[in-house]
Length: 418
Ligand SMILES: Cc1cc2nc3c(=O)[nH]c(=O)nc-3n(C[C@H](O)[C@H](O)[C@H](O)COP(=O)(O)OP(=O)(O)OC[C@H]3O[C@@H](n4cnc5c(N)ncnc54)[C@H](O)[C@@H]3O)c2cc1C
Image (cartoon, rainbow, N blue to C red; front, side, top):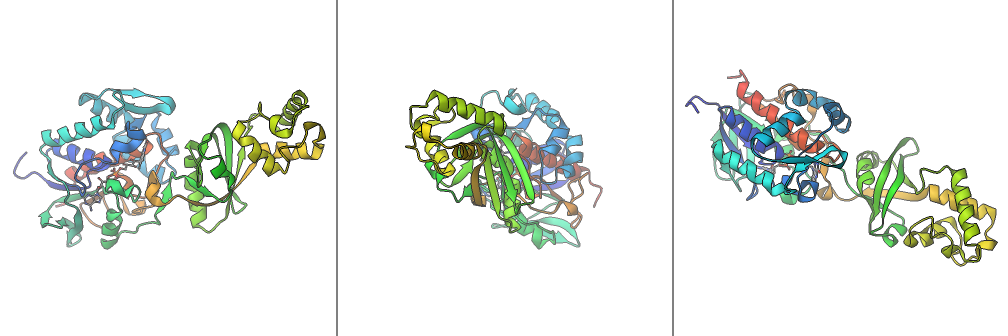
């Protein structure tokens, strides 16, 4: 490193910040990395249920499609450093990886700590000056340009600052929204923060009754204010407060947005999406024929999980003790309709602290997508979830953080600004 090396400060040793710091140092910058927590990469360590869902093997166009929060802003970052570049880098560091269902990429060891330790080694190898438990309080600006940062201890000079403080979810990992405040202080617009990828709270008591039941191959439809509609097919779960699971998380971004706009949101679960109402009716008739000597509660066991029978009958207004032979056609129609549309009233989301990602953040309109530099403050770069970007699970959020962190580092280093 030459004595004229650029001084770069990275704020936040999470997914984006770790790669930004290592990349800038590797390319010859003098890098200081400030982290408020006692350890680096705490959130990285809990992704993919502790296995670290590094990225996805999908083509880059799929990454944009899986990023409802400003996916197109990420084109340049992906063009310069995509999932293959990331995996090449990790492999060159000695990490073995594997691809699982849905293209999710994990370390071969299934251990997120291996990735964290690799980054810790790289920080040492590249002589990054790591300051743990030293949160940055303020970013210092002189004449519209970055001049350094102020922590609780003292101020530090820098030629460029890369802000990678993450979102506002899972604050116990250190992401408490500090970056939003610092960005606002510098004149940046921060769009409304709300939870994305979050379980949903429902009014119906039956969710609690069915707590722990996981439904596979169902369709969940949601409707905001009667006009905004979306649906997903796959797996979901009942909880004591409502619903969760993969298709719920996927739809939660839209639901959270509609709720924040004041719309009432209804949901509906199609327990038999592969069957039309007519085909399902024939199937129900066959079962009723088979169990004609029983009561209704005993006649539906082939059609659904045992614990669901009473809930479905109750919603259809049919007594569980009704002899099958006494069921009227109108009741059967109601039963079929209920199986095709279990009603839900979605009243809210779990709190943002429980969200996998934060929707909203520093407005991408004020950030140059080709460099990640702020359009407001020269030599300030922004990367990761602190930006108004959010994606579905599957490694897309991590790749977004890695790609923007990498681009910010390269740009900060190569910037011609004095
Ligand atoms: C439970 C869970 C599971 C997830 N699973 C997946 C998944 O499977 N796939 C996927 O793609 N994404 C997943 N994510 C999302 C993903 O982890 C985040 O999008 C990603 O970590 C964002 O990276 P980041 O670098 O922007 O922020 P973070 O990784 O949150 O890092 C921000 C860092 O900044 C530090 N910091 C904050 N303020 C300051 C300050 N003032 N001074 C110094 N340091 C500061 C924080 O302590 C933290 O270390 C998951 C998230 C959670 C919570």
